[in-house]
Length: 111
Image (cartoon, rainbow, N blue to C red; front, side, top):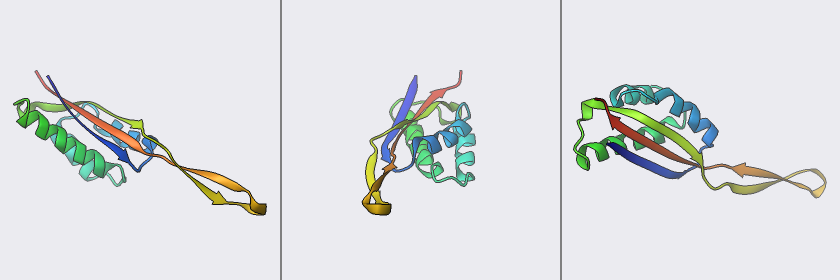
């Protein structure tokens, strides 16, 4: 059985979030929490929040043992892009893409 939690529309590029996701994939929940607490990346805070939410879902909704939980899947997909413009020389404009992410954490129980 799996427990899942996700957060949407986080204002960090999915490429940057994916770097932090790779650090915790396959680790136990306790190890993943420790890694995220000590990682100096902006994406570690929302991922930690989602990880805690998924652990709470597993414990309360599916009655799984919190000591046996591990991160079976964690991924960040692209959300909508906020398009902005910046004025450039001679009256032209450049586009600035402010990217957003959808982060999903799936926890499973070790046998």
